[in-house]
Image (tube, rainbow, N blue to C red; front, side, top):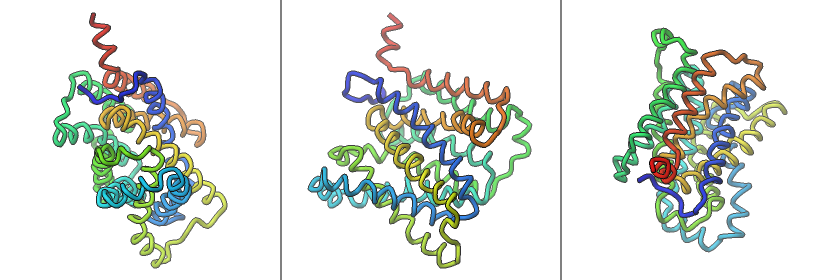
Length: 310
């Protein structure tokens, strides 16, 4: 049986997980304003040090003694979470995007929900229900259809390079982060306090390579527009997005929360149409329908499925 929260109502977790991919997708829009101007690991360090600076004082005021206890007991795990979720999936992704196309990156990164399910199966013995397998296939097909623009011949033109390997590594790192976040010992902290700790370790994970970037002359954002975009990455793509995802992982389980990440592609298309002037095409609609159908099939509460069978 898929893991579920103890709360009798799943309405809030599901609502949060529908909104969360939208918050993650804003990273694409904001990233357009800083791409090529700010070094990858400098941007990642700014992102997570700002999040930690905002959240840590609140966390210390609310859960100071518990925060210290978790830090002392699980510092190795926190290092791993920071490196996986904010290091490899932060500066690593930004670096990968300088060497590969958005099409390749989207297609490769979209396998992360599948990797979450497989890792939970391998390390936690979680059973994969047939409807989850079907939903995963449908959602992945929808993402691929959008990325390939509805033309399978596009596959022939795809080529892969070291940037693709970085994105693939990031997809695996995100799967590992999603599963490790549910480690029992970390459950003593509320979402905000734990996120504050992980963000601090994420900033530390990016610091050495950020220093290298700066030493090579790759600088900070140079314009007001770039700084505002960086602030958007901190507030929306980081604070709201990661808080929502981590709440979903705790409430619904890593596999179910991960499946909602397939919504990033449809949301990304929507944001591109609204803010970047891109046009909606038929293949977008087909892909979005496949993604939504797949997520609905895979995440529909098991109790309701049993009730409908009766």
